[in-house]
Length: 368
Image (cartoon, rainbow, N blue to C red; front, side, top):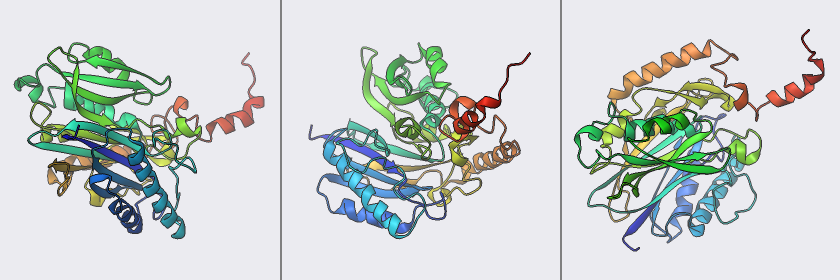
C-alpha cells in the first residue's frame, strides 16, 4: 500500500578503529554517500554504536525486499573496502559471504524491519546494542509490553489493558510460537528466561478478536555463531519499538533499561555483563571490550521522513543506571575466567573450548 511505510534497521561490523571500539568516521561517510545515490528510499540515517555501522532506512517496498537488502549489502561492502584501506580491525567481519544471495538475513548483518501504516503521530525508538546477543532484548521487551510495574499504561490505559501478543523464536530448532499476554504470561516467561536460545522477535497489539494485529516492536534475531559455525563476533542486536497511543509511552519504553540487567557477550562474546544505557557519545566500549552498551535514537516519522533524531539515553536520569552498571562490571571482572562471569560451557561451543577438550580427551580417566 502506498500509505504504508517500512522501517528497516540493518547493522554490521565491517571494521573498527582500535580493536572493537568505534566505527571510523570514513565508514559512516562512505555509507551515507552510497545511500544518497539511490531512489529506493524515503529517508535514511547512518550512525554507529561501538564497532557496528547502523543503517536506519525508511521506504515503501515492504519487508524482506531484495532491492533494499541488496542496497544494504552493497553499502556494507563499500564500507568494508574503506576499512581495508585503513587497515581497520575485523574489516568485513559480519559479511559471511562474498556475494549477496537475495536476502540479507542469514548472511551476517543484523536486521529488524517492520511495515506500518503511519499514524497521525508516529514516534519510534531504534535501540542498538553492542557486545551482546539478541536475547538481550527479552527482559526489556517483557518490561515494556507485559510488566505493569514498568509500564503503567497496562493498568490505567484502556487501549493497552487487553495486552499484547509476543512472537518468540527458538534459534536452535528454527521454530516460532506466539503467546498472548497477560493470560499466557507465565508460559511466555518459561521460554524468554532462557535468552541464549529463545528470543522475542516481534510484538503485536491485539485486534478486536484478541489476535495479533498491528505490529508494535521487532528485534533482530540473527546469531552469527549459529550461521557461521564458529565465533566471528557477537551479534550486537537492533530493534524498533513504536510508542504512544495504545502502545507504551516513550518514557515507559526507556524505563525498561533503567536497571542494567545481565546479558551474554562482552569480551570475546564469552562473558556475562551489565547492559549499560548510554548516549551515542559514550557508545564506545573499551573496558574488557565492554561492558555491553545500548543506545537509542528516537524519531518522529512524518510521511516516511525520519526527521532529526533524539539521543534518548543522553539524559542525566540514567546516570544511576550507568553507575550501577559500572559497579556490576567491577564485581564480575573479579571472577575472571570463572562462571558466572564467563558463560556456561553450553554457550562456549564456538570458542577455543572444544579444541582444548579434544586435545585433552585422552587424558581423562574413569573415576574408581
